[in-house]
Length: 315
Image (tube, rainbow, N blue to C red; front, side, top):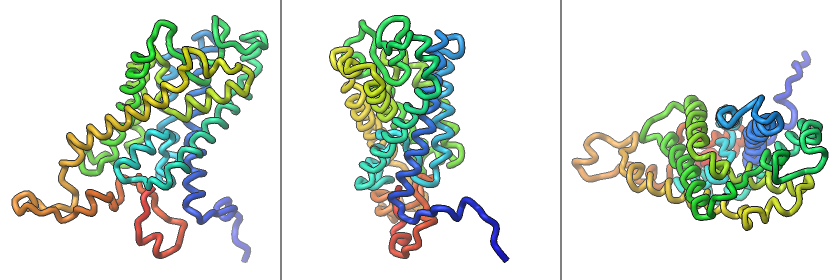
């Protein structure tokens, strides 16, 4: 008897590097699409169809769905700084980091192209067919960020530094199995409120470019779409500030959390008598995070290599 056809039987890939990459592309695409499209509705309707509040909520919802999408595959980092946070805390192998970053940029760039295709007619009607970066008919800021004209680089740097630090530091806390013990299915929902709060608190001065993939991929796209090289030179070459500020904020906030709280929490498999006896039964668990951490460690449900499974590969 012929078995029923299912999509599950088409193109099943067993290489974990490839499946993680595909997961990051899909998840980042989903998040970036919500960010770009909500920005397009706000700008192109002059606030009639959306607003900064609506854009912040749309970004939060997009992040939640993106994380749910790739949660048990690659972990759905969807942001190089989140991937960096997982590397710093031992949940992601450093050798996988470049693959994650490349795939995240790919997903965001595709989302920018997709959004532009959907809104191209409205953009042309809005700016008269001439792509603009300044004035009331400017549309470049749909896809990337620019600081206020009266904002210094120093202030802008620390604005982004704080916003991205809060994002990565709080995510570090939420995914720490020895702290809040947040249920894995609740983590994406929590991120809605986290991102909404950050965007509504640190979005006015710089546009809160706290996701490197969305900001830089959008900047590259606008250059390719005919906005010119000024997308990089505007604001006295502002384009380098968000990436540097995000990386610095991530390192500072995640390190602060670990040194002040994370490193001092008891492990799940430590007995109550450990403190009295002065012994630590799971030093390997603390240093290597070899244990499954709220589903942010990839379950190798496809790769059947025994050695690979035995190593309990981190994402």
